[in-house]
Amino acid sequence: MTVGCGVSTVFDTLKKINETGTTNSRPRSGHPPLIEPSQRNWLKRLVTNDNTIVWTLHKVGLRNYIARRKPLISSTNMEVHLAWALEYQSWTKYDWAKVMWSDESTFSQFQQTLDECFGDAFQDKA
Image (tube, rainbow, N blue to C red; front, side):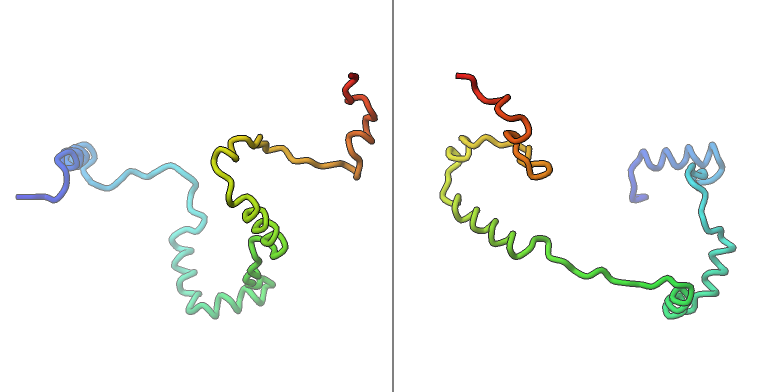
């Protein structure tokens, strides 16, 4: 007779029956359910269709809105990205190997450059 599962599964199931008298799993740890079975039954009787839920939530001030779809990138940025890609389209992997990549961004705070902030403190004294 073929059972349709592995030998170890059969042995583990028989062992569980001998130890506990059942094949049911033990209760698992975790957060207790927020809605008890009696409350689930009450909720099931209350809700007769989707309109009941929507109407009730609307009456208490909760409204359902669908977020407006927005493009992932603006048309201006799309054009800039495309122009950049077309400009470097013919580069080989050897050309790209000469590029120094950095995750740092160039920015200025309060519209000041480093020269304006520090003067010539960082200039080469050659």
